[in-house]
Image (cartoon, rainbow, N blue to C red):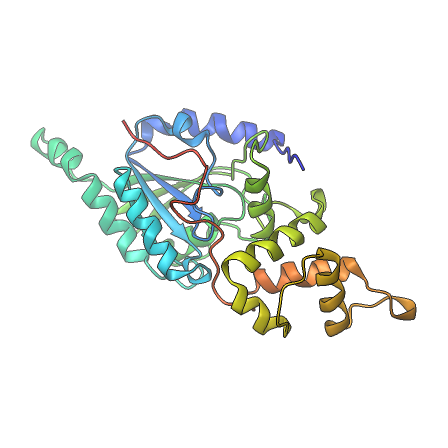
Length: 291
């Protein structure tokens, strides 16, 4: 399965980000804590160039806490500060400003020494669609300024938002890349809702999810679906779940589409608890580097 997605507004967004860089002090790179590398655009390093960066591991409440801690340490080893946040609940909002101030302390000290009056930090938020940018902005601004939605593509234009006297934010539309070279990256993005379901084969996504949970969270899956062992045949998996949950067509036949939707929905709504779908040491993704 090769997933390609590069609508015109995303190409435009890339140009807009590049044009605004000279106005920016720091980049807030928002990623999904469940898939911190798969949910970042590989072109981001090229686009933002050498700007200081703070990685925000959003939706941390939905991710495995122990693994999120490993990711924070991983980014630190790359020379990049990362913090876990939950923009929906507002967790970690104060830390964002404090960490940005720490990262930019030398720059603002130099400005002060030159007689430049103190001003708000200017930050640009970048991230793929549906990672929570608009929700984060509304939380920081403490009012509904940015449009939000649970599907990709809600934010279509740039806007400046003031956050008290300390911070000014530039929101940007989500930017995906033209093609996912790694099939697994596409599956992870689909499973966590970063890509519209309508353009995918959801059966592939559900199969990936089952096999991943079998290897990494077997007890949770067994408890949720009341099974003792994982059958080798994936069809048998679907049959068991379909019969158990009443996903049936006429004459008792299994409705595989309904089973597929059920599996994906249960993961997205945390029916099996907080899950992380990648961890440091078990990745083949491009590593973030800063010069």
